[in-house]
Image 1 (cartoon, one colour):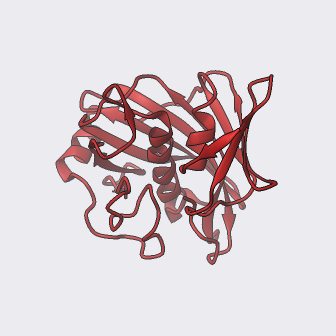
Image 2: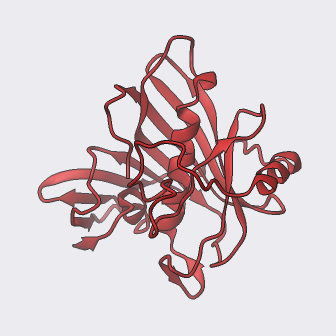
Length: 230
């Protein structure tokens, strides 16, 4: 067992192989030191003290349709990255804040009338990497916030359903490693919804539409005072 930096979900999942499902038990603050424990069945548990923050388990291959059409990718790259804060309640989020110098800055915007939220992302050398490839936990963080943006879109919910999305579970499959400096598009979209939940898909693709990694995220709809995740 040893210390683990954030993103908590990605750091825990990085200790498991293949497709991984993470279930979040309680939020963790950025400054908290987390501990990782792996049992003989390859289940990964992340703790803060004696409190379980999340559990990660190997899962079957993730099967979702990824809407990475040539037109969508062209629109995302034509508009470039979001450089102004769209959500003032998220200035400290590692994944989507455009104000954090040490963050990813992956704040997405609606792509026309497609129902997709997207932006560009070029991971630089300041991010954790190994042999020129971005570490998996960073890809998990990159796949997180686009789902939250999509889940917040009123057009993807039943009429009258309001409130902020709170991530409950996340299943990720990484197909290919991402190189430092690679030009990418990151996108999120709604898969299904109910009065109290919104399921979203997210993906990281290159300029040709080649999928690098993708995820299925399950959100509950919480009160508007519930803070956004890490």
